Length: 221
Image 1 (spheres, rainbow, N blue to C red):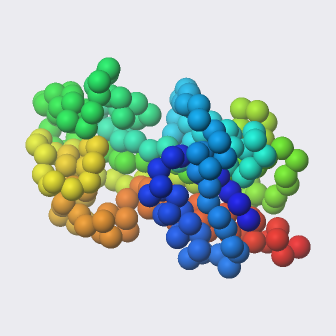
Image 2 (cartoon, rainbow, N blue to C red; image 1 turned 90 degrees about the horizontal axis):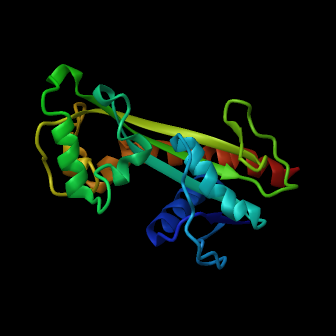
């Protein structure tokens, strides 16, 4: 079975292939947007992580492939969920990790420790090409804007926003996101430690289990 991850990130491609291989006996080849000759940028104009993931996964689905995509970001309680879907471009034009972290610290400067709760959130979507049918459980069932059948899995890791950065690893807001159960920020965790508890790790493992349940049953009919 060939599926397309709506990404050009080779690391993400390998990760998905590895996780699917661990959860299913099916042989699955994960292709990228480059592999199917799609060179345009995808406009992520949704209002939620799930909607943006569906928008991206719909691109390969519209070309006849099973499409997969994820969307992730940071939601801060004291900022009414910001930066949310705008996490990567929070500081505006020319945004990068440093500028985004600076803006977050500026917005949070007077928020007391007990109100600095936050969550990293990830949504992973699968969109089926038109005409393909599958028995999708109602609790994860969704539709793309084009009316294509789809399903979405979500993962979240709760933590606290610190007053200053700690750690040199990771990326994005990792140096400010403190996880009490580990006593470290995401930037201080090893890759294995982070993957075990991260929003994306949780969402991807749940997605792979759901994908296996939906498509392995279909191939065995």
